[in-house]
Length: 219
Ligand code: G3P
Image (cartoon, rainbow, N blue to C red; front, side):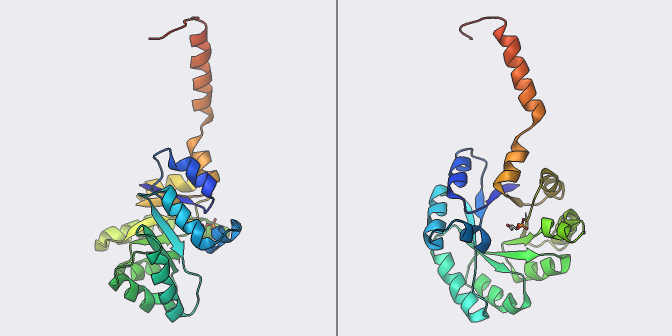
């Protein structure tokens, strides 16, 4: 499963880039707005930080023709960019055209299996179901990951499942069990996933026992 960072925080991306764990970054207008920097420059810098990574960048235009034109411009910023487009019927035709143009598309704000199937039919690279936002309205967001996985496999689509809007370790756990092809994690969630109290306790105990030997060099 690919691990993407769900952020536009350059510092955090740089810190995690050196771990070898990160396969890319997903941004959205909210992330980019938070950074108070030219979004175009920021996107280019993020691409430089992860030269092999897949970087998703979302359109901000609303009108379909403008979305199409903007998507082409976003894709031209770097070869590793995927253009994020919301899963809305106004953009179905735009998405189809962009796929035919060879633009890699990550369809965002996907909530149902039916929406996911529609996007698979259009040949997009990723569909991004939003787990946490289902939970926000008292539904079980994780379930949709399992259902979409089943749908993709049943019809043998090439589209990959990217679990998004993950807010907890439990959400990431569900994404793994559902067989998501990728998961995008906010930095805080990634930190939580990487940490375990028993790992820390074990390291401390091994170290304490080792110190009792008072050995200066090993091996
Ligand atoms: O990747 C989409 C993600 O950023 C949305 O997350 O927590 O705002 O629902 P959230």
